[in-house]
Image 1: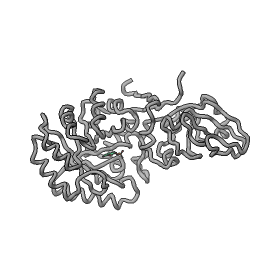
Image 2 (image 1 turned 90 degrees about the vertical axis):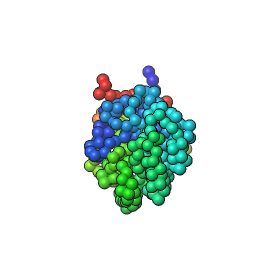
Image 3 (image 1 turned 180 degrees about the vertical axis):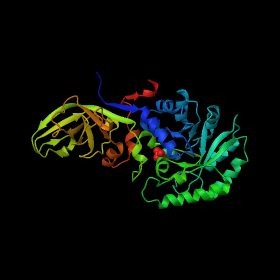
Image 4 (image 1 turned 135 degrees about the vertical axis):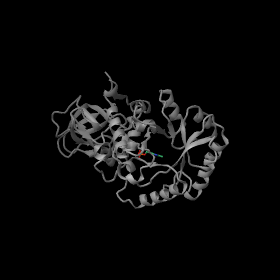
Amino acid sequence: MARPLVAHIDLDALRHNYRLACELAPNSRSVAVLKADAYGHGAARCAQALQDEAPAFAVAAIEEAVQLRKAGIEAPIVLLEGIFSPDELELVDELGLWMAIHSPWQLEAALAHHPRHPIPVWLKVDSGMHRLGFAPQDAEAAWQRLREAPDRVTDLHLMSHFATADLGDFEYFRRQHAVLQTLAERLDAPLCLANSPTVLSHPEAHGDWNRPGVMLYGSDPLELSCDASRRLRPVMSLRTEIIAVRELASGEPVGYGGRFITPDRSRIGVVACGYGDGYDRHAIDGTPVLVDGQRTTIAGKVSMDMLTVDLTHLPDAGIGSEVVMWGTSRHGSELSVDEVARYCDTISYTLLTGVLPRVPRRYNDAHSA
Ligand SMILES: Cc1ncc(COP(=O)(O)O)c(C=O)c1O
């Protein structure tokens, strides 16, 4: 007996999605982005599932890389934001990590450090995202200084991040890409540019390396889906059950603040899942869920440990019925996390990374069974 809420993680689907990223970019190597605990899916288990195929992994910070090394992951791990203080360089060297350099202080620290083995470096250029990276006019000098220090750094690449690769309007994407192409040609530099939307819909920006993240977990980041993105398979299925049912007359308010008012005689199901599990409290009435594989909707505000759904048109549903918040149902139907995110006025990334530790992860891995 246990609370029925479980995040089921399908590692075969993860491998399928990773292979799709590789298939779409046959001339690139694809680093699997596992930051934020593999977008909430469990970084160690996801790395283990991909370690026979992925030549490298990427995380945001050294603490995440340490966890992967502790889990026995031996492949290169890239620190996408590089070091946060110079004293991390010792560990970068010891653990054989690769790192981004996005700021002058990181450049100086790397050049002042004497590693046992030169550290592979991705020099980050701000081509228009205006978050991290050297301005294009400063990147050239930084690149030359790195090139002159082969005992400190090696395997240099230019890295950049696109601000609008997911949008249907390609104009700003093209401007960023043009900046990078010009710089790469001048420096004769290999590139690592592509996040998931770029992998899926901008083959012209595939580089020596790509950096797919959210697509590995089966979410389609594109504003306008394409044939490739429709081939993604959901990795996380957040499943739970109905734990109580209320029969209510017309006009009855449901839940905190009485936001939902029953329009007719209604059957309301109480579901074991709430914002204390990471389910988004911004979910509006009408947000879809699957009950026994059939679509119905949230009715009333999300509480900490529970939420309420409309069962009026599902007379067979009752206590113990399966409820899928997103992902696949045992009954075969599917509810995409991207669709749920739209009802919460957010993106799949926040829903997936937001599933809290109290929700057990259960891994289904036919590969290692
Ligand atoms: C630097 C960098 N590269 C790659 C990614 C992966 O992006 P996505 O999940 O959109 O594929 C991210 C994610 O935020 C990132 O910050």
